[in-house]
Image (tube, rainbow, N blue to C red; front, side):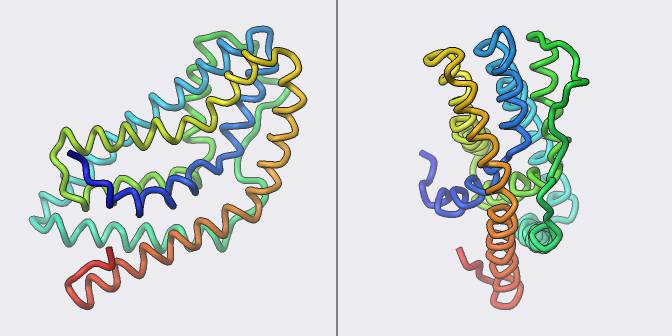
Length: 223
């Protein structure tokens, strides 16, 4: 059975990860099409599939590095130290415009390119991928079995996708009336992210940095 203790660490990281105005903007763009439910759902599915697949690759890569160095526990904290520094650096250097948004030159939407757009949004919003690295590192530190680690990563991705699933759900329930509401939420999220992202990134970065430093000084992690 998966331990619930890890969620005390993953939930703050997940909250930081979810503040993603780039993904939401693309979903709202898809919801403004002639097939809002199908196309926004396809975009979210593409993003989730790509995020989960990338998480598996990243986890395997981190484990391979750890095995090569023959100190898996120590290397997990070394990775955590680097991630903490990177998150703090991103918090200090954050700007309001955190990524590309859809524009009028975007091609006509269909199910295939919506799925593809959803997948590449991971690369458009580069700063938003860093908390995901931190989440994967925490899962690896917990010493789960391979099956448990995959299930934990799957649960993380499922919970991450839930707030964004409101876009196709509202489109299905409210029809065209959902469009102005989604646009207002999109504008609010875009503005809120300009101060929320530096705060959340900085906080998570400091926590990870402190945990890694405490481990290297005392031999015991903070959590």
